[in-house]
Length: 414
Ligand code: GLY
Image 1 (cartoon, rainbow, N blue to C red):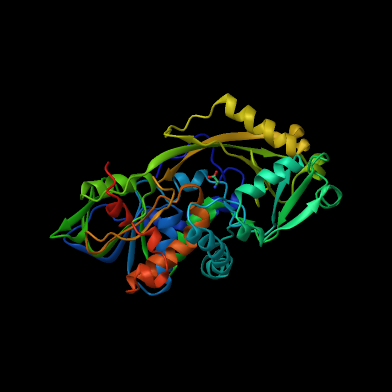
Image 2 (image 1 turned 135 degrees about the vertical axis):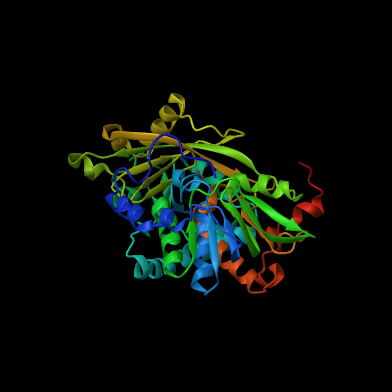
């Protein structure tokens, strides 16, 4: 995971997150030093949204799990995300991912009740629906040409007069828009911490600040991990370490490359007298997305800069995002600017995450490379990994296309 750039996306203005931080007790859960041989049935490496969702699912099935994170829970890419559960809006590199996105969004809504029963944490999950607006008939046609027919199922067409009636805060010149009522959004840091905390409540151990993790492999079988605190033996290791996953795997001769795609975002807030102009649902346009959050802020994103893993935010990006956003929601010009930040998405050469067993090494699993959709696909990734640990094959689950072993078959070189 990469560390967050400027800004503290949720914590600054959402007091509930500070409470959650205190409740995490994850640092006190971390031993200062490991004495003797420490063992866990399954180790998850990475405390971002994917690792925490896996720990949550395993713990909820009564599995013994230890999650290790080099910095803090949700300290990296997960903290920079917009938190859109955009199953009907995103483009996916494989049809399996499109279906998985839908399933994962619905699974998250179910998990929310389990999480709040365990922790009383509010993850800001809301199904307020998304608007995809168009400037002209020609823009609409181009959009339809790019999308396949199945993606039309979850959406309704609104013509200009319907748009003006339903979303008065949207540009009145809008030609028309798709309304996608099932689309949802969540506070990503809150969700990540809530997964971790819920997993703890169900018996998982969550250790933060565990540095220098390396995989311990012997005779093509995972034996555990070594860390700056000492050695931990285990039966299974799940590498859910985002961009760092690549390096961990490489150390044991497994080639699962990932590359950074930086994204910049900004947060604004509407003053009390301007709330009539504040969007009350997400605008997911071709050039920008505008996401009203449960903490009262509106997040606007995002740039896409392949190969960049720094966390600077350029003035040009702020100008471009604000320009695009205020075209769609003119009231944004009167809003207060709060902050800007950057995160780094982990992408893979084929745009498909690595999820599943690494055939070369018994007991080793990958769960990284989710690119733009880590938050959205977290819940289903947790379920799939837990299914595999219970003995199901990728074929049985229907996710062979996501298998890390596809890279061996293609002879990918680092
Ligand atoms: N999930 C949207 C993005 O990565 O920009």
